[in-house]
Amino acid sequence: DHYIEQLPRARQELLEDLRTAGIQDIGDIPLDFPGLSANQQRVRDAVATGRPYVGPELADVISQATYPLHFLDFETFNPALPAYSGTRPYQIIPFQWSLHVLDSSGDLSNTSFLHDGAADPREAFCKSLIEAVGPYGTIFVYSSYEKTIIEQLAREFSQYQERLLALPERLLDLLALVRTHFYHHNFHGSYSIKTVLPAMAPDMTYSDLEIQEGSLAPIFFARMIAPDTDESERERLRNALLDYCKRDTFAMVRILQELQSMNKTTTSQ
Image (tube, rainbow, N blue to C red; front, side, top):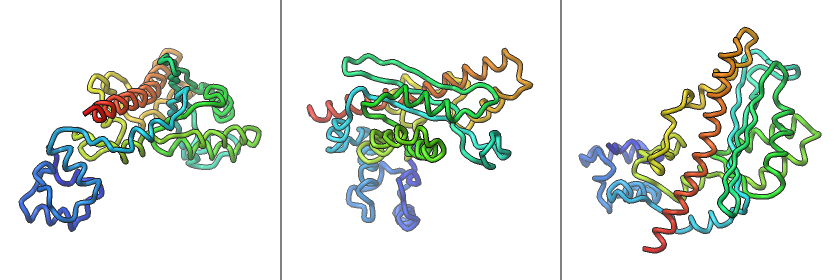
C-alpha cells in the first residue's frame, strides 16, 4: 500500500538500496536504515505507526495568521489563440476566484467571481478580488500560483498595481505549511489538495462534483463562453465551475481546522 517510490524526493540510489534489502513498503523500513532524509524518516514513522506526523513548529506558524482568515483559489485558462486584445498566445488569463472568509467568532462566508461573456475578464477579476479580500487578514492559498497570478495582473493593470501588490504580503501557503510540518500516511507521497483533503477530512471529497480536477475548469469555461452554447448548457457549466472552485477554498478551511485540531491533540499528549 505504501510502496517505497512514495518516499518524497527519494534518490534512485536509496530506492536501489531498499530493493536490495528486500524492502518494498515504506512501513517496513528499519528505524536505522541509512540514507533517509529527515522528511523521509517522518514519512516512514507515520506509515509504520499509522499516526500523523505533526511538526513542533506547526502551532507557531498557524498562530501567525490574523483574522479574518481568507481562503483563496483562482481558476485560469491559456488559449493557444489570443482570446482578448493585447494578449499573446498561451497567456494565462484568470477568469474565476472563490473566497471563504472565517472571522474570529467562527462565522464562515463565501463569495465568488466567475466571468461570463466575450469581454476580457481580467479587470473585473482584479476589481472584484480587491473589494472581496479587504485590507486586513491572512490570505491562505494552496501553492504559490495565486501569488504569481496577482503579480502578473499588477504588471498588466497599473491602476490596481498598488492594491494588488499589497496582497502577496498577506499570503500564507497552506501547501508549504503541510509539506513542512505535517504528514498523514494516507497522503501516499502526494501533497495535492485532492489527496490531502480526504486523508484529513474523510467526509469530504470531490467525487460528488461534475468537475473533479482543475484541468477540466478551463475546458468548461471555454464551452461556457462559446457563442454557440445554449443558455441551459451555459448555466450547467457555470454551476459546475462555481461548485468546484468553492470546494477548493472550503477544502482549505477544513485542512486548516484539522491541522489546528491535530496540533492541540498532539500538544495535550
